[in-house]
Image (cartoon, rainbow, N blue to C red; front, side):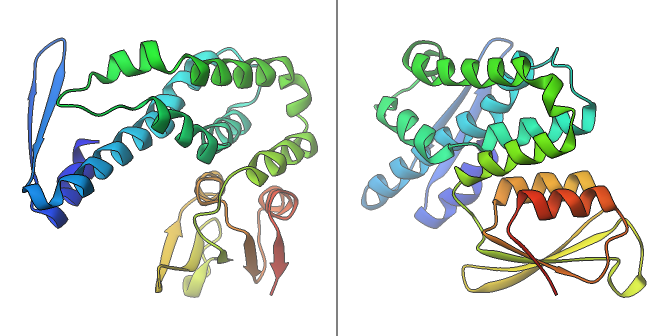
Length: 229
């Protein structure tokens, strides 16, 4: 949250100061009056993002720590559950988030977000109760496809190839457009590629060339809307 705010506050001539001790970290923010509303919106965005990404991840990790699922599938499932239905949950946090001169995030989480935590408990319970079935990759892919259908895409379309010019197997190149600009990432393993795709939830994947990892290819074609180019 601190890093996010430190960068974005510069757009509104805002400043941030932090103090911490063994029990509490405090962040103070100030800006010129003309940008007050924008900075308040920015603070709310930072809080919501922290709760629905980092805190939700830690909460579900603890709730699902004894799930009987292999490590790779567990990691992919956890990432999908963190991203699942983030728009609805964002609205829930936003309604409970009343910004005044001060706000205590632990108080917000412990006392105002019980409905949200109940949702997370139900999700974790469902995963634990069905973990045996999810060790079957076909069943896991079916569940992931359902979960991703409730995730708003951050990217409309991505192009993915393996190896690039060097032809190195197990390295994946992801190309896309975001806010009018092109980008390209190199991702060094199949599982990290899946985690990235789950987070951005693209509407369409274009797969270029051959993929040496047949398990990855099966997951891509069964979880996402894919086209082979």
